[in-house]
Image 1: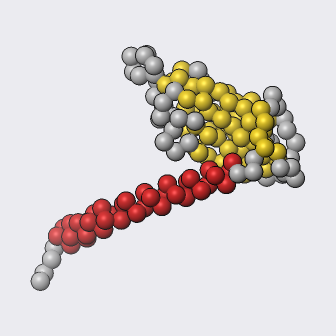
Image 2 (image 1 turned 90 degrees about the horizontal axis):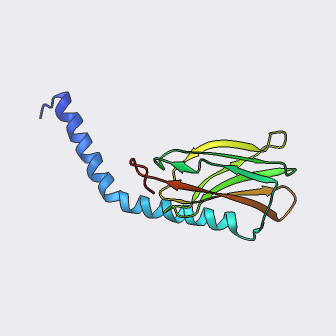
Image 3 (image 1 turned 45 degrees about the horizontal axis):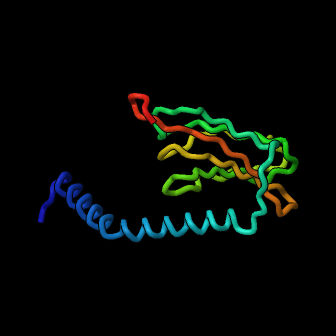
Length: 147
């Protein structure tokens, strides 16, 4: 059978789409399990206490939760990691930054916030089993300005 390049590409795309449809539920379940395990390991044996040395800055109101700017800074010594958790997201664990020893203990990033929620910054220090946290509220509004 002689195929044109267009027929071949459409056939391969169709096979790939069929394979993706069959594997998608398994991939989604694996991703959720990995994320849940990661969040549990992040919070396991965590003696977290609120600290004034950790500062979280977010805008109070955002029109869309697709990209919310978050800044976290801390004056705690020997920071190992900074994690961001969005309380009411379907997947609450947003990101973890591992901090190298000479690096400044401050991050700035954008995360997705599904609905109005607390954003929690969890800071772990080296050589200590303690973690410190701070939180800030963000209110997601619709295009007309209503929450």
